Image (cartoon, rainbow, N blue to C red):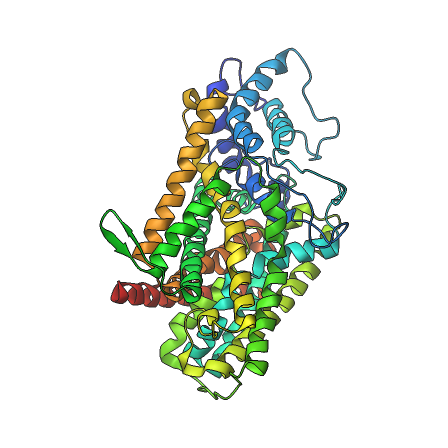
Length: 535
């Protein structure tokens, strides 16, 4: 219940969430100015996404110790803050009648209700659950242009680089134009996310953007898509480990409970057992700076592949095909996967010292990563032609030193990134724990460990059932990546800005939507069919 001024009446704290949601729906009538004055309701799941993704926007800089720094994620703080937040909101709300609980300098200029001020205060007081362990290498005032660019490249330069030669084989030489087209589209949609964040100072993550555009339902739907994308990345990491370790040690075999495991399955299981302790870690500082060299690892792989072609007797003798229409559905999924970094872009933007440079950061990141993707695609296709496998490292002669360098470099990143990938999903599930189970530290840690262990075990099962790296990557790219990187940024932008969008930009955005929908439908159908045919 509210009084005539829009304030909650005494004794109605239980209805505060519904009140805020109704107020957003009532006050936002499509006018951008009114929207910018509204706070993001903090109730509802998930509350930990932005903070759990900050680790990718706070990777070590080049300052002080080469590529190493010391930024970490304190999971205890992250988890406990989400559990305490509702209780703190209630306590702060009840104290409003006895004291003035306001920000000294409100972030929003327009007057707001006591409850809105209270929620904003609690939000920002609890928004620092990402513990930055600054050993002199960070900048407390925000990321510089170079540092933000490195963070963006580390996000984009992932395992997708291994499959771009396979994508070029499937689509032919003309198919590489799709890589450049997707780079252009995803760079632009990354900038659209930045514009959406500028609408309201409290927007800190992709789910916040979806919440601003489509309410709590949009927040939940987008969050689920992002978590499914992260989960599928974790599965790909295990398949990658199994494939490449089996390439180095093809005679490996195991038998468990009377069931024989081939080399691939054996190494998937061993990799999971090695990764398991990192999943239990309560602080990810070490993993964060080891995994921060993603772009360096990509450069090493490209150079190693080039070395094999030039000096290890493989050569560049294959001419390939100009165009292959039958392989296009696979191509679009593989190339879309390469640019699936939009979940982290809002965090990188929020971390920047000069946010006006974000568009330039996006352009630089996409140019560098597209050059790496294109270079290894051309090299691999010229070297192996129609014999290319889903990962170019599987084609390399394993007795050569450069091949071993490429494979070992490929293997390191999944070991260090798996726990970082799984953390946002695990903390989101931990938010759903009943307060009775999360009230004490020991039960909380026990439940957290169980959730992480079960998530890891489930990815092993999926990797056993769907051991097809290329087809699974095409599915991820066509389904999750197309939605997150192509379609949803455009929909959120159009919903938030509405009639303020110019005619030319409206046309361009609708073209992107058409491309994204066609890519998602055709690519998802093709990849699912390929997986089903090979199981």
